[in-house]
Image 1 (cartoon, one colour):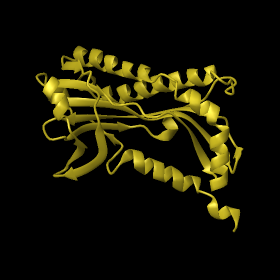
Image 2 (cartoon, rainbow, N blue to C red):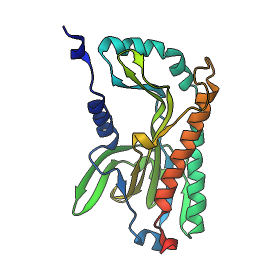
Image 3 (spheres, helix red, strand yellow):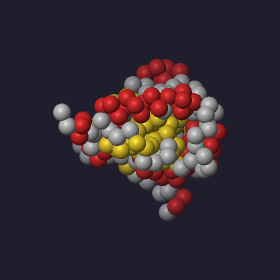
Image 4 (cartoon, rainbow, N blue to C red):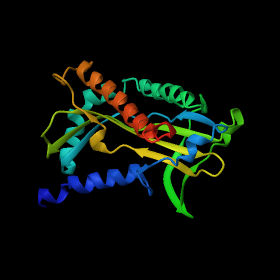
Length: 240
C-alpha cells in the first residue's frame, strides 16, 4: 500500500484541533459596557485544572512516523510533565488588583472549576455548559471569571519522521466570564495556536533538564496571561 495513504494533512489536523478547543461557539466575545457599571455584583475568579503536558507534533506523518516521533520525543515529554504550571495562576492576582481598582467586588476562589466549552445560542445570547453548585455552596458569587490552560508543552513540525523545525514552547489558554444564574457567557477569549507559541532561545536539546525549553514555557505562560488581561480590560468603563 502506498505510504502516502497514511499521511495526515497538517491543514485538516489543525482544523480538527481548533474545533476541539473552541467548541461550538465563538473564540472571542467583547464585554457589554454595562458590566463595568454594576458595582454591586460579586465576581469570583476560578483557575481550571491543568492539562497533561505534551510534545505536540504537526505536519505530514504516517502511522509509523508518529510512532517513531513519539519514541524520539520521550525524554523531552518526560521533562515537560515536570514543569510547574502554577505560575499561570498569577493571572488571578492581576485580575483581582485591576478589578478592585475599577471599584468592582472580586475574590480569588480556591475551588478548582470546570466548564464544558460547548457554547449554545438562544435569544441573541450565548450560554456555556457549567455547574457551579459546589462552588456556590462555599462562596456565592454572581459572576465567575474562569481561566484555564488547554494545551501546554512544545510543538514541532515534521515531514514523515524528519523534523522540519525545532520544538517551540506552547501555552494555549482560554478564559470565560460567566453568569452563575444561568451560565450566560458575558465574555470569552480563546487563544489561537499561533499566538500561544514562544520560540526557545538558544539550544533546546539539553537533556534531561532542558533549561531553555523551561524558560520558553515560563515566557509562554506569562504571554498567555498578558493576552487575556489585555483583551478583558481593553474596552472597560475607564477607556470611554
